[in-house]
Length: 76
Image (cartoon, rainbow, N blue to C red):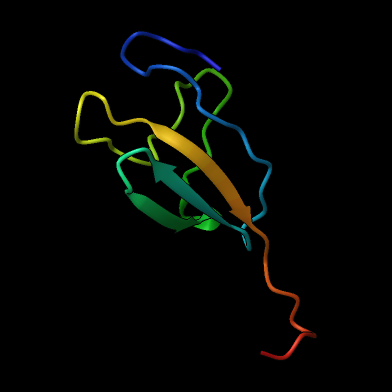
């Protein structure tokens, strides 16, 4: 990954499939849940994709969780 002053630090990496979801949580209580299929696939020489925008200078992403796809055989 290409890290620059503009892109900032890499907070975390998760291996996902299109059926998975990700949850990102900031230290200010912001929570974003998104489908992995909605994240654009990037080439090798890119700087990545921004998944969350922090609003305050001292706000940081503190947790990233992968929500695996549901097993279609399980009934809710």
